[in-house]
Image (cartoon, rainbow, N blue to C red; front, top):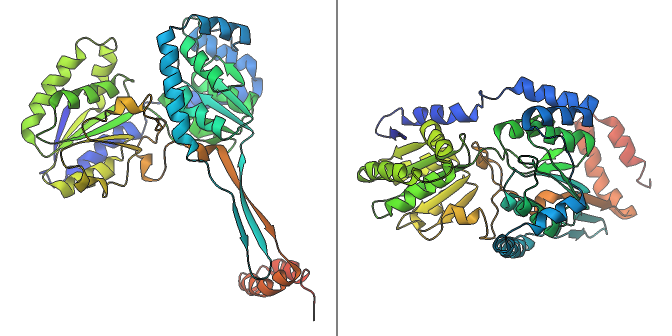
Length: 420
């Protein structure tokens, strides 16, 4: 069922890139539809949002009142409340350590430069329908950063709020809950709520909408359909490999699950175990389609090839489920999150390890990081030159501006320097 790529072939890297490109190109997305929805909302505001919600989700209620939220929370199973409380505590503690520090610099001429971290004024968080874990991952860093206004967009299911998401929202100090999804949710956050930045993972449609509005607002990067790469050796437990692959595949049909190994003898065992683990899960059809379409087993010749393959895939999640992970870890530079050793299933990091699960996908871990506290600040430089200071450093600045033929720059600098 899962495709196999043997790296004995000299053209294996091209074959790998071609395989990845099918998903990364996102040709299956109707981009014209997304553009149309966003433009309609930009012009017609809530009327357009409501039109698309009714069309795609049969939903005619776009906001959740405090009373409705509280009623929903009362229905939540106490076990889920405790699980959310536990996850909240761990995520909050770990992310609190990421708080950036302001910088101060004074030179010998008493020129002063400060570099300050200013919290964003407002943030929109997109939360897929039934994922309180995503709300915690996105809202807690915003809460730590003291963002003034946190707005959550979370679709209703059959007209109802998700009690767990509402409980997590209340715990994280969310200002407002909008109950819509897809491209119309992104349009609402940008053109009606006018947030400074949008964060949170979603479908291809949601990711495309975020990409299109970038510049009007900030976005957290390409947090699209989820991914995992499992590195295994002949000692790795077969069930651990297959459950990790199946676990990621159940997120959605566009999820990507890859196994990398040097050991041919484990491949058939993994294939069989994957089928066994698919049998009794509620999202079997989704997982099966994901594995058939985007699943891949890569058979490498040696460790150097393994490193090359992993860095080329640049997975969102990487499990190093091998006996000697130390020989790989320092050479792997492209991954959103790395789970080390047999006792670290990626699935735990989705919930309560304390680390982040909103991570770069589609190869973007080559140049970007997972969501973190710094994403909710902007940095501003404060420059205060002294009379002596501008005279001392200004003459060198004049040399540069004259060279760049920006004569008005030179005049501006000279106007601040007292002539002798």
